[in-house]
Amino acid sequence: MKIPHVPLRASIGAFMLNSGLTKRGMEGEAAQATHSMAVAAIPQLRQIPPDRFTKLLSYSEVALGTALLVPFIPSTLVGLGLTAFGVGLIQLYVKTPGLRKPGSVLPTHAGTSFAKDIWLVGAGLTLVLDDLTHRKRFAR
Image (cartoon, rainbow, N blue to C red; front, side):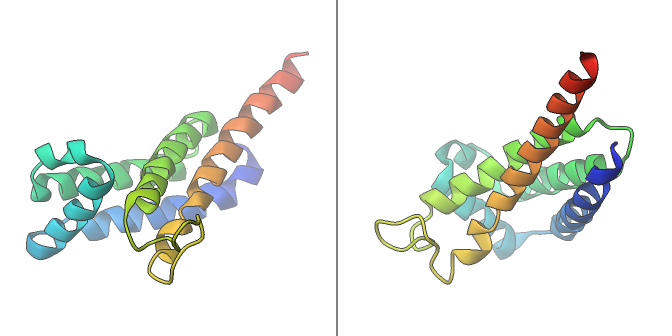
């Protein structure tokens, strides 16, 4: 891990790890609500029961958060994971009614907490591109 990546990876990694650990025991109405929102954006998720979905989500966040915090995992790899996760959250934002102002990509008050996930995509792409361009420079 490059030293300039440490603040980005540590802050996002700690946040993701905490988010995943928080969802670890999610059941009942909370699991149903999380699952319903995901199904609205990605209908194929309907095939997964709500309790199982939230466990998978929890495991994914814990794995991604841990990968970001572990220094020997390449930034390109964690950047790709972070980008993919962020894109999934942005899909949720775009496809869920009421999160955006009509005819716009701008968030409503309710959508602000989802719209901010674009930062995860930006951070992931920054890690990937920085690693790839850094390698290219030193390969010459």
